[in-house]
Length: 137
Ligand code: SF4
Ligand code: SF4
Image 1 (cartoon, rainbow, N blue to C red):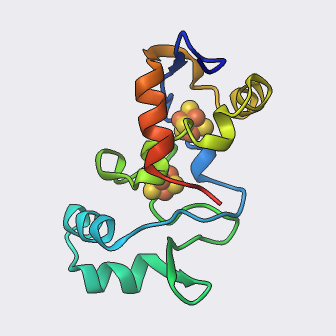
Image 2: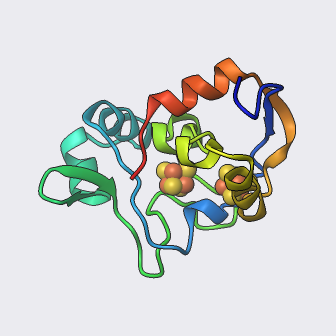
């Protein structure tokens, strides 16, 4: 069994810290683009033109504003404008493979994300499902 055999707690506080500041990528596929476009009232083509950038010639990531904030951050501190429809990369956080590979890695994540180790207890199966859903560079 993995070191987190008894599960891990996580409950997002919507602090927005993981969506702001540090530069990075938020990968989106065509199905996610279509969902996000519908949520915000755009066609997929319009949404892509406004909110998506191409990386390494073929991969798609949400646009980053100056300073590194994700373009889908709400203007206030409320977090994500599309929370219910957020991309898999955001939805599966913090249970990315690299974050759960060791207790040390998890503790490091928990220092950054105050939602870790509080709230809902996720089972090993749920954690594994999330980790398997997406591979993050
Ligand atoms: S840093 Fe953690 S608690 Fe804050 S918005 Fe991101 S996932 Fe939620
Ligand atoms: S899509 Fe939403 S949850 Fe994901 S990084 Fe952007 S603002 Fe944060």
